[in-house]
Length: 130
View 1 (cartoon, helix red, strand yellow):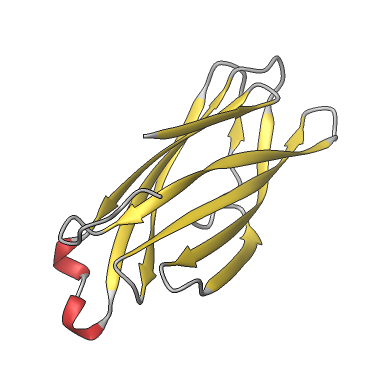
View 2: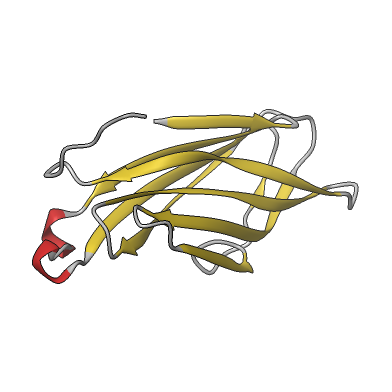
């Protein structure tokens, strides 16, 4: 589990390797990641956009930007949370992701809420922590 709080908005990430969708012999590795966004601030926030930076083990970087998440732009009231699951394929058996959500406060102000960096590791590969 990975988590980070930005201006009262907490992002929690749980990545999971998907054996059934991965084909290591074809250099195709797939992960799901479950995200929960908790609003600990005093005003509602609306998730407007997402930004991801995805880096595989060979150093290849892919950037993804878009409106909302999984086709939604949820409004998260103070004390509430929002959860969704998405996925990420890589050509290597490991990598990492990091990103940010642009949230709009009830006052109209836009803030960037950080998504903590998290690793994507195949359980079938040996990994050394450097």
